[in-house]
Image 1 (cartoon, helix red, strand yellow):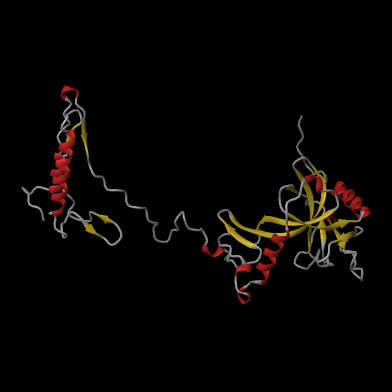
Image 2 (tube, rainbow, N blue to C red):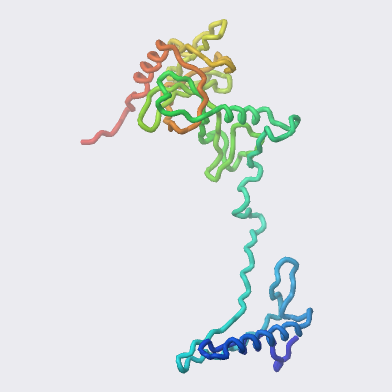
Length: 309
């Protein structure tokens, strides 16, 4: 421990390291004082209480150096004074226990892993299918869109079933992921292009409702069945509307489920620059039927609408 009258060689060296920039002997003074400073630093024992190594960062952990009161700089005769001091760099911030760093993902379990990069035995079939669909998708120019085109695109929706306090989202969940705003449901959804605009288009999504069709739906008239022209047997309609029918479907596209329905009143706006997969087209008569049903049910006026006076 330094005594009351002991002199800190570092502080004393810093005090003497004031040089006069206007003097012709400034260079020689700096050289002499620099050599003296280095010699005094070498004389400090390794176990000095002023510097201790905590294993990761050299800093003063105890018995901090007594602050030496520096005399005010002399400014007489227009000479400039410069004081050289050594400032300890700030210690890098460390994340508090239980809190993730800003450089780490918020949810480590939700980190995306390419299934194609994993060994065959470790691949998740559902996630591999999603990845393969993404590889087949591409961005088309808006001139290539037309009403009646059947596409498949990614659709993100707020997950109304799960809540952020009850859900346990992991990478193994096929369609659900967690965000700071709550869980969302994401699927590659089949859609039928309905109307084209300058920067976007509207599309009618297709649903099977987990293979249940229109069971327990309170408004089945807002849905219309869709049939695959490749199917050998016709299936009964799920609503009172005449089912839609496909005209062409590309090779490699699976047959439409007999529970597939188009949600007439649930038209979705989508940008042209979103990647999609082209799958086929509707028959011209089915497209006209879909437009008729949309114009009939979608603009339905709500009761009790407040109008301007």
